[in-house]
Amino acid sequence: MKHQGRLIVFSLAAGIVYTLAYYFDWSFLRYDLGESRFYFSAKETSPGPSILWYGWLALAALAGVVGACAVPPRLTARLSPDLIWLVPMLLITTALIYEMRWFM
Image 1: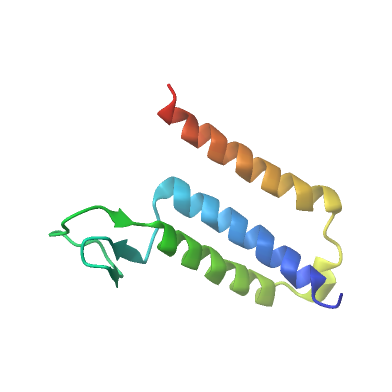
Image 2: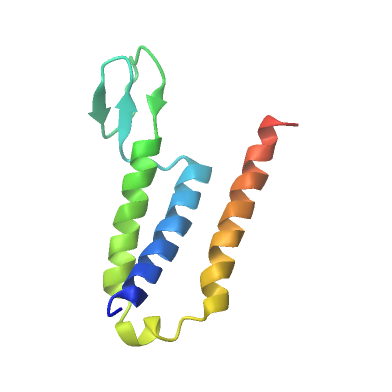
């Protein structure tokens, strides 16, 4: 498993950026349901809501690729298994706390 460290860094970076993009509504790509088209900015005359999920996913994938390429392999070998499991658990907890607003 030569590239296992890069995959771990990709997953961690993508998860963190996806959670931040979801929380703060950072989306450089929007899908307009009414017109069935992608846009890079919000349209003022949109007939319906825009889907931000595609932009969040693209932003997370881009951050994951940049993170995986930027972190040297010698640093990925030092990643603690505790850190690898702690980050996704914190991200899931953050998302659940954010979504509690729908139930209160």
